Image 1 (cartoon, rainbow, N blue to C red):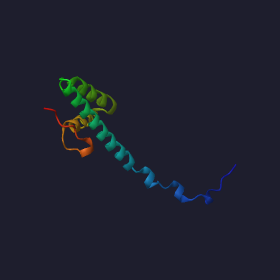
Image 2 (image 1 turned 180 degrees about the vertical axis):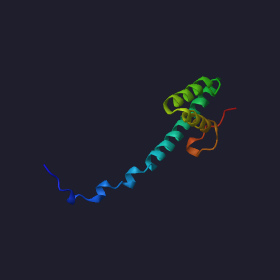
Image 3 (image 1 turned 30 degrees about the horizontal axis):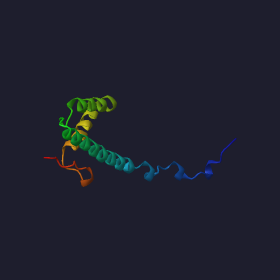
Image 4 (image 1 turned 120 degrees about the vertical axis):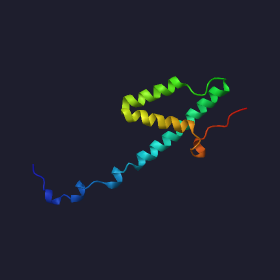
Length: 102
């Protein structure tokens, strides 16, 4: 069986710039970071309301270890930035921590 390659368009071999874009993945990462930050802040607020420390250093350390195990040394840096987002007030309104009671 033979194929007539003269009928193939050269466009078949050109990269699809739309398809190769990382923009949708970047948008998903940002959305997930905002959701994670909001969830962590709700959890911290619930712990405070229950009279417990808002942060649990053991769980934060475990998170850093998980990120490092899967992503290498840069994973630790990424985990630290994610945790910093949780502890900062520099996010949009949709991810802000509820105000403290009392």
